[in-house]
Image (cartoon, rainbow, N blue to C red):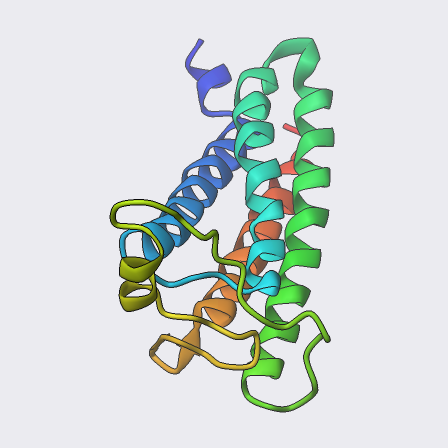
Length: 166
């Protein structure tokens, strides 16, 4: 029984689940609690997390017995999604550093709220973020830069887990 719980495919799936869930929850907290409106590129970078969280949860349960092959398949798909997402994060970071131009759709994606505490209050509290402006940096990296780091890590963990044959 203990051998099934410590299988590397299951461990990799669990790590991907925890880190991906924590990362997307942090992004949503920055948006809804911190007032940082995401740009279109920011929103696109969330797709990998929206896929990986339920897929990695399923892989945790599939990583046993005869269904381990399905867990590996999910980990391969997760690795590909996060590898693409790391590239998107690097692209977005380059746009922020003005190394290359961003997409023509570069703007803000904020929903307008009407009524009490609506538009007027929203205009006072929401920080508009364009794709080519880093609204926040930590240790020199913006949200997009940290997403590239997290996505590369998650792609590596998922690929490693998918490659385990034990």
